[in-house]
Length: 415
Image (cartoon, rainbow, N blue to C red; front, side, top):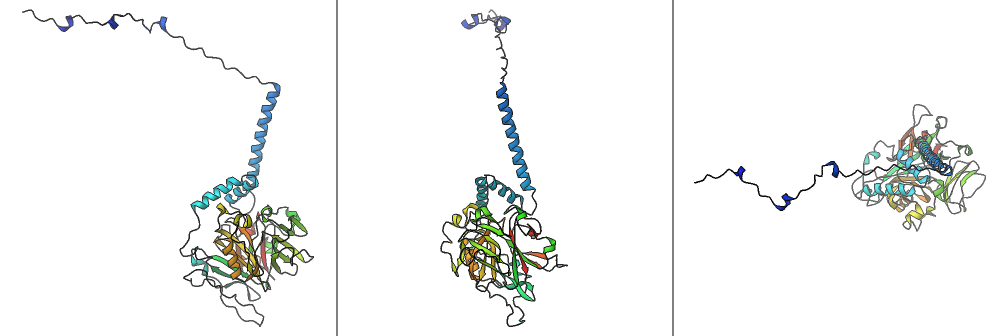
């Protein structure tokens, strides 16, 4: 038996592919040539083209520098305006109103005012007395309590407290009310100011109405003018949005508009609120006029259009919402002043609170959280160092009007 040969001795079978003689692609003969790198073509500009490019670059630099300077000036301006308020105002004044409104709308949609709940009643503590001493037959008493608008009632709701006295009598009184039966976790501040014991002084803002050299008053309450100060509060919209004017010291910004709601201060110290052009008109006795939209209340009646076309009639609010921060002022039949401010107020509920407090003519002032302010002043160590107290928890610092302010405002003094 012949032994089998080892496998290595068996010749390998080859196929037709193995029998082909393929070229060695790694050989230098078969190396593919690399594509030649093209030289970048230099764009040669004509003299005119270079001038155009340089001019465009200069325009861009000037634009960016101007925007930077303008925005920087807005952010570093004096006063207590918040950064967000400064950015919003700058944007609206420079054609970015839609962007600002869009951001505010988003914020409002994420955090709308809640309905239901109970309010923080801490503001009802540490207020002044609810009764006044009887000094004579003509003494000024405490304003009658307001009937609450929501149930169940809260202890002390609608009850007026004397927070500032003049000549021993209650000159400024404060009460707190829930604005309606829906927004029961909010308390609006209601202020009554005696027309016999107080007088108003209108102050300009350095941005609105600006032109500080035109006015007899500065854009702040300086130390020298703080003796006798009993309150300060915000004015109306920016003049360009108020549909009216700012008048003082013989000068006017805007146009004194017939029919516009107006706060008018007279030389004898009294103040009136009403529609311009009727009983309220320009006379030598007029010291100042501040107009803002139309009247909320006239002849003791609420305006019939409080719930219609809110944005066009009563001012653009965040997200076009009805229930936002609002403020307003009115006059009673006896010549006293009533001021209301708070969050989650509609035009109608603002007007209703002013009406409940006795206003026979009333108007809206400013709206939205950044612009509402009312503070009364208690005695400090000296007559020129009164201590401010916030009416409601508004956004601005309590000493807002002790530094230059961008918007106009009112100071209230003892007569």
